Image (cartoon, rainbow, N blue to C red; front, side):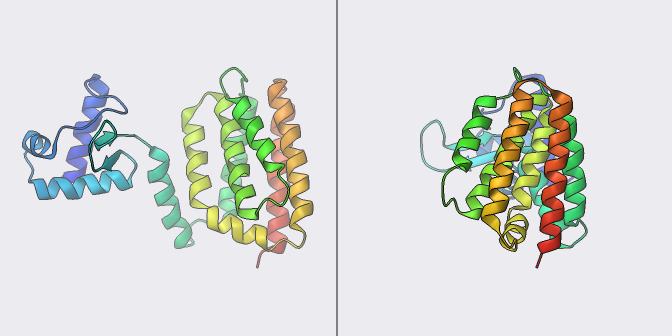
Amino acid sequence: MKVHETVMDWVTAELRSGRLAIGDHLPGERALAETLHVSRGSLREALRVLEALGTIRTSTGSGPRSGTIITAAPEQALALALDMQLATRHVEHEHIYEVRLLLETWAAEHADRERGDLAAAEHLLERMDAPDLPVAEFLQLDAAFHVALSRSAGNPLISTLMDALRTSITDHTLTRAEALPDWPATAARLRAEHRGIYKCVQAEDRAAAAHLLRQHIEGYYLETARARP
């Protein structure tokens, strides 16, 4: 077994037992190396792998935020995997579009406004209304809005997958948006569609929210597919 797998197994066992929790510090390097019977050099390499995967965060210095802290951010590992899939063209934009349809319409059909943070979603809508908002910033807010709405379904895996998708396709999405012939008109339409979807989720009209989301995702996909460079 590779050292990073050994460390991951140990962290997982500690989390399951309740001896460690998200936000806790790992033992010091010397103590952890002795516990796992690995060299300190191998342990350092393993910790770098786990940090890249979003399992831990390592900070130097002093204070409560220094040291090695368990973060368990699975979207980071998923985003890395998706980046590789997109880079090798094993996954195409059409595949992402299909996954978005599945995830987001399911989330809308199971939305409960008490479970999500609709105040955060509304704040994102307000920020998207800012005049002369750069395309890249609009798209970041747009993606964050969709992730925020998905949290109303109460399934953390759905939101994690969507967050990973958002991170991994940022550059690809921006390239497609910048190729559109009339971005201001597109942005105005997207803002109106977002408002309609938000109102349906707020009113707990799940069927209408899912229907509007499907139209919204399909419409933008077709528009950018026609205009792609």
